[in-house]
Length: 333
Image (cartoon, rainbow, N blue to C red; front, side, top):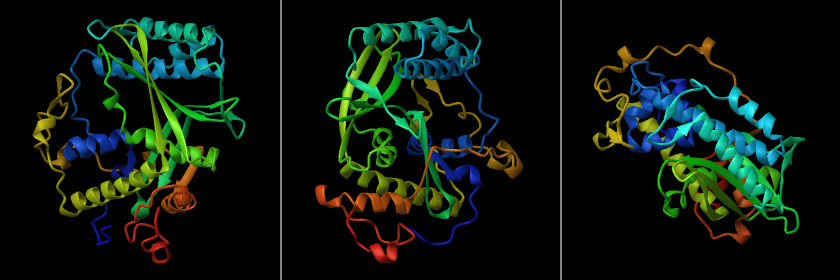
């Protein structure tokens, strides 16, 4: 890791997530403007972005509620209250609307009635269902990585743990490569370490509602703790990269990302302007305090990984990556 001094980094940049790191990888300049809350961003003008977000949110929340065992009436009410768009908004091209979201939940209830994941029970953590279970990892220099696990299930006979990841897609079909090596799924091991310290591997089931087909596609992948060791190192590299950008005060623009998913980047016409004129100064008094069910540090991750190294392939830990690195040295993860 690069431990050289860097200028003070805006605290908004220090809060990382799977989606924000995806933006960092595609275009660092977009990552910077988005994290700093630039008001220069312009949607496509027809509310499509709001609808897309609302649709994905309520479908995921509805799916989680089904596994929680709530009544259909309560699920629909919860979805209605969580729909942050006009109730009559629809995207006919992608077949997204509140009514389609309701249909997605109805379809899952039908699948459950016919035995889908019938041998799996919802996991509880401290008396609370493991639904939208939040975690945050603290890294050196003030960086924090947060995430949320949709649903955690466990087989009532074998004890096998299954993480359910809820997605929606307007694609006609899905290629498994879309999710096979997703770092989001690997990050769930952080939560599972707390829930089930004895685990050496777990499965992630992607339950993807295809809006055009009005059907679910199911993809399952097994994740090991070797992959988690690599994920830790990749996070540290991303943090080093951000520190480098902040050090030279330049977040590169990636022109190849100006047009993706059939639309222009919302910052396309402003990203070349001075950052000073695009964002507001950080206001510490306006920052919202967040609480997460699981709070960990980088040292916690490394220590948990060391405890499993007897059954995993050895992976080297970069020197100087943790507060106790002097003791760890080149200890294997």
